[in-house]
Image (cartoon, rainbow, N blue to C red):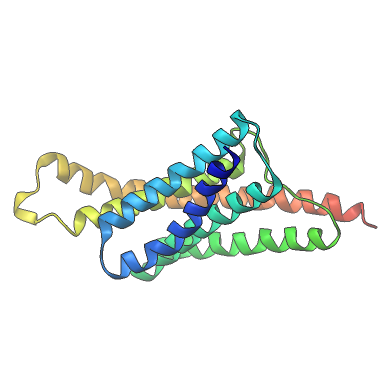
Length: 199
């Protein structure tokens, strides 16, 4: 079971890089489906690891790397494609947040101190990741639908989807930013406490 759980993290890492050429070749539905499967694997590897008690430090690191690569690669693709400030600004800030928090962890690592991701079910870090997955997934779905449906044959339901989905994308992105900044603040406070103990 441990190998299977770790394979889900490996799948997420591979998917994070696979969506780049798929997007370049305009295989938008493939990008959306692969992203959804990768996002779902994030839930299942954590759930199965806890249920069968096969958690490990290596598995935790791989899970963390898979999450970050999937989200960051996807958001960079969106930022490059949709060059508007209300999409680029939250993406740039969220990528900067990931680098910032990784820097805090790296410094503490040199001091043999861990700053693990909280394991609470509804932690702000997990809420942030969930919102990011929803927002990015909605963007990929919107792009996929828009690239395949001809205007004259759009049904009322599809019109409703095309009108409502952008709001899910934008609001999801900005709510993700709020959660990201909140999460970065909690990590900063925790970092300060740990650094004080070094003195």
